[in-house]
Image (tube, rainbow, N blue to C red; front, side, top):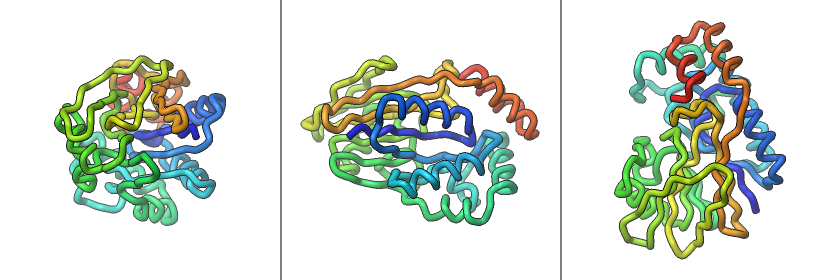
Length: 246
């Protein structure tokens, strides 16, 4: 089975549609959405509706910290991020907010663990920013393949069970063998707000039959998305980051 993994969409419907179309063209069988559907961008309602539709068709979805911030005041964010959350609170319907509120933090299925930030203390949304953080995640996930977002970059950590993990930087479009006798923690990238100085949308495909991961980048009209952010009255810094990919 080929699973398309998408995370950190951040109310960017144009990037989401581009990634979904690219994944379908690659004949994926299923979708998994790893949180942060809202925040930053101008179209939170459209994005949440798209996720709801895919979940109804059998997709996996988990909650991100920006999703939780819609209904909770316990999530710390900087001023521009909080401005976008306040905007989303105003435009989302009660049903859309309830959907975000009832999402699970983590899903285990087969050889896979799906989570927004890390399987270790998932409710605290820690960043996987080192081999040791990846190792903690892998130990708690208790599966060969763990898929995370949150970092907004595409990175892959691997190692033998219980051993120190190593960082690998994948090349987009090149399938990486990920045999299940090792432990793999994949940071799948950001659909809606990449931060690696490349404005292309990012997502990842896991082929469970071949045990491979392919990290994908997809072009879309990010300038139009930035214009939508400005039209919505959201901070200029958010639009600038969309245009420049950081």
